[in-house]
Structures are given as structure tokens and as C-alpha cells.
Amino acid sequence: MALADHGGFHESMTYAGLAVLVLAVVGLLAHPRRLGFWAAAVALAALYALGDNGPLWPLLAGVFPPLRWLRVPSRAWFVIALALPYMAGWGAHALAAGWRGGSRARLAVASLLGGGVVCGGAGALMLSGQLGAETTLAALAVALAVAGVVALALAGKLSRRAVAPLLLVIALADLLWLDRTLVEGRGRDYWLDPYADLAGYLVDAGASRVYTPSDSLPQPVAAYWEINLFGGVDPFQIAAYQAMACRATRIPCAGYAPTIPPYTGAGPVETMWAGVTPDAERMAQWHVTHTVSAFPIESEGWALDRRIGDVYVYRNTVQPAGTMWPLRGLPAGAAASEVALGEADAAPEAGAQFSVSVPWLPGWRARAELGAAVDVQPGPDALTYVRATGADGDAASPSLTLDYAPAAEYAGVAISAAALIVCAALWWRRPRFGRRGAQGQTSPEASTGASTEAFTEER
Picture 1 (cartoon, rainbow, N blue to C red):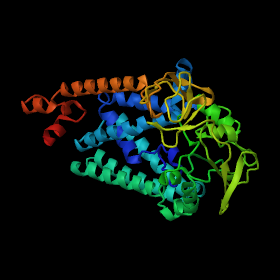
Picture 2: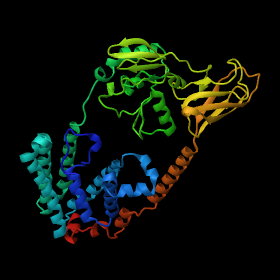
Picture 3: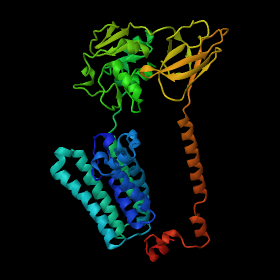
């Protein structure tokens, strides 16, 4: 909270800026009733963000287990990142209005500022080897700058109009200084061009889906060349699909992992699963036509097509069962295979069913433009099955249209629409302070802690 981790890991940042933190405390002290809700939200979010290291999240997750679906309780810090700048705005307003506060309030602000200066000074003198010179220098410089502005403001030695602009400049400079150490620009010569030969070969080979156990074809590269991947970073998963992927890749799964397959073995990603060969037949069910690996794969069902640089490209020699059927409304790379009797130039017979290489979820719907009545059912290995319940023998085209329309989506739209209507109504009925002030009534600023003389002078 007091030291910006220059060059640190961006997903574990809690630093909002020392100026913002000090002003948020000033705002709370000056407007305790107005900001009481936000202060409580900050306290609860901080406790929740501790996850297993604090008391709140284990208690709530035990009472309401679906909370575990949200992953990473520490991201509740986003609530704090939203609340602190709002509270800091009121703090800057209080200082600009001449707020002095009582002795306890001034002591709290002085303690916070003094703590920042001590941290910066101690870091500069003793901890620069561990924290880094830039971190300690920034902490000391920002703490001294904020302390100087706030001390002069509280002592009445600084123009009120200069307080907020000066603190804003300090906050911007502090955060830009930090951000500069977190972002590194890389051109396409780093992330795209080295994979051009590999991606070009897969496109020319007509790869339907590609599996890469060694992460040899990064997802941004695959997206750029419109190559469909089997697996990858997938934070929101279907349990049946994850279990199927573990069986198809033959990589052991133990609980949740943000990637499919999980990168939880020993050693670097490139060689973590060397010696583990994917199941060609199960991969064929999902229309995985190629595997790209940094290590050789010696197994039936996989034939070496080419070696491109240090990467092996294998072709799946197992073909999906039955005939490939044209489908519309599916994700890119998905296809269907007939697994029962039927002819490709006519409507499917009643009882025929098709294995569709998309994960099953309630909400998939099938419409037949071929005269056959069809419905969608779950199948083995998390596949979606389309089953023909009736047929019209005069139909000429076997094409189907599938779309995904879950009931939960409509419920979510309804809840969001209701929330927007309520927010709009509350905004419309909000008190018009400015209009009452214009009619000569007492402005709310008069009761925010500023003295009558300071308020009169400001008016």
C-alpha cells in the first residue's frame, strides 16, 4: 500500500498511489457519514481479498460454495481500486475548502505521511538491495512530496486552489513512473514472425484443430492466422470437457487448472509432458488433425509430417467415424460426424445421430433445413449429439443449423435491464443540491467539517 513494486508482478499489485491513499483518509475523516459506505466496502473487500489467509472468504465459501466459481478472491481488490479514488476526490475537496480537522484527524494524517516517509527513507538506507533502487527512490520522493503538500495545506500555508492540482500531478507522476516499469513493448518480430513458417504450413495443410502439448503455437499466433486450437488458457471450464481433455491428452488432472491441459508437471512447459502421447482416436472425435510438439511423439495414430525448426508437426491418421456433415451456427473448427445409418445426399433416417465436436451444455438447439425433426442431447466424452426423431425422404440437403441460447443468458439480460432501470430511477430522483443552493438554502458543504469562516470566505 505504501511502496510501489516497480517492475513487479502486475496481477499482485495493490498500490493505488500514496497521494490517493492519503487523500482517501482525509476524505473519510472530513466526511465520515458520506463516505462510511465506501469505507466499509474497502474494509470488506480487503478481508475478502486475503482468501485463505483471512477469515472472511473461507467463511462465505463454506456457507455459499458457488463463490468458488469466481476464482482468485484477491481480485476483490478491484473494489478498493474503485473506491479509493472516489474517497480521494472528497479528500482533495476538503483540503481545498480549508478543512483543518481535529487533533486526532491531523494526527492520523501525520502518522500516515510519516510512515510513508519512514518507509521510503529506511528503504533507501537499508533495503535498496532487496527492494531495488528505483522502488526506494520513488517511495521516498513521493512520500516527501505528498507530505509537503498536505502539511502546507493543513497549516494554511498553501493556496486552496493549488492543493488539488498539486496532488493530482504527484499522483499521475507516481503511477506513470510505476506503469513504465510494468509494460514492455514488443513488435511482431518477437511474437508473430518467428512462427510464420509453422502457421503457414498448418494453414496450407488444412488443419481443422491443432493440439500443442508444449505450447509451441501460442494462442495469439493461432488467433492471428485463424488456426483453431484444442486446449490452451481457458479460465472458465466445463467439468465434463476438462475430464475428456485429460483423457484425450493422457495428462493427469487433479482439480482445477486455468489451462487445458494443465501445466502442472515438472520442468519447463516445452518439455513438461515429454513422453506422454495423446489419444489419437479421442482427438479424432474432436477433429484434431495435427499435433505440434517441441518433443518427438512415437505412437500409433500420429505420423510425422514435417519438422519446422525445433518443432515437430504430426498428422492424426485416425479419421472421425462416418461422414462429415455440413453444419451452420457452430464455433470455428467444429464439425459433425455421422455415427448411425444415413446417406450424405438425403435426410437422415429416424434414429440417426450425429456427433458434434462442441462441448455439451444445456442451451444447444438444432434446426433441420432438410425436413427432418431433430433434437440435441448430451453424448459421451462431453460431445454434443444431434438425434433425428423423424425424417422426410424428399429432402435434398442434409445441412443442419445449431445455435446456443441458454435460459441463463435471458435471465442475465433481464436482471441487467432491471438493474439499469432502477439505477436510472434513483439518479432521476436524486436530491438537487445545486438547485436548492441557488434558492438560498444552506449548501451541504457547510456541514462537512469546514469552519463557518472558511466556508464564507470560499463562497
